[in-house]
Image 1 (cartoon, rainbow, N blue to C red):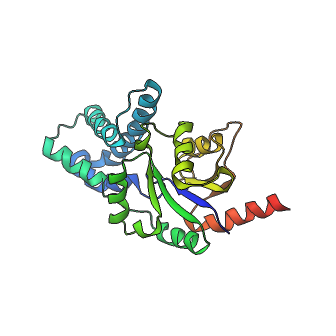
Image 2: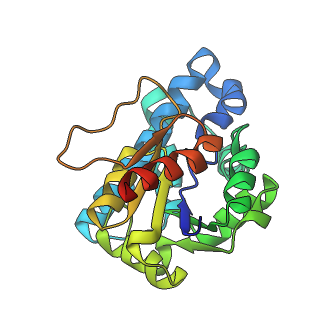
Amino acid sequence: MKGTLAFDIYGTLIDTQGITGMLEKHAGLKAEAFSQLWRKKVLEYSFRRGLMDRYLDFAACTHQALDYTLEVFGIPLSVREKTALLEAYRELPVFDDVREGLSEAENAGFRIYAFSNGKRSDVEHLLDHGGIRKFFIDIVSVDEVRKFKPDPEVYRHFLKRSFSQPEHTWLVSSNPFDVLGAVSAGLKSVWVRRSPPVIMDPWEIAPEVTVEKLPGIVPAIASFENTQVS
């Protein structure tokens, strides 16, 4: 089994809610709600900037989303405190199943890439901090084309950078917008449904494969490909 796996990073390999413990110092019992809103606004800002053609990198979106969330919750922080939170965002933890899943994919013969809205330097730092950088041939960032997922151009850019063909390339992501973006651009996709309450958008396109854990990717893809052959 050979092909290319393009792993999304934030929310797929890296737990964006892993900062909740640190937020408790500032938001108390509202830390989880704070973390969720912060993440939601980061994505919203990237979508809006993409549509408005006013690109700023993902780190800038993250910073501005933090400012917004602090205002919503009425939490005044010093520049030093905000800087500490933003630095912590660059060292978010990996999910527990990530190393096993990546190892299985590597052993199965897949070419493995990181593919992210994040800046290359931030993604590199996250992967190094999580001890998983060794699994990836390269890191492909949307910052290279100054667009955000799910713009079709970023998926075409990934194919070009990784020397991959769409029919042999799988986008692996927990984010429905990313999964559908890849399918729309002609790639295959694996949706990692990490949270049961999260549903896939009921569109006219859908992921080829859905799993709950990363170690399920290899057998799920094999099963799909076997059905296509038969």
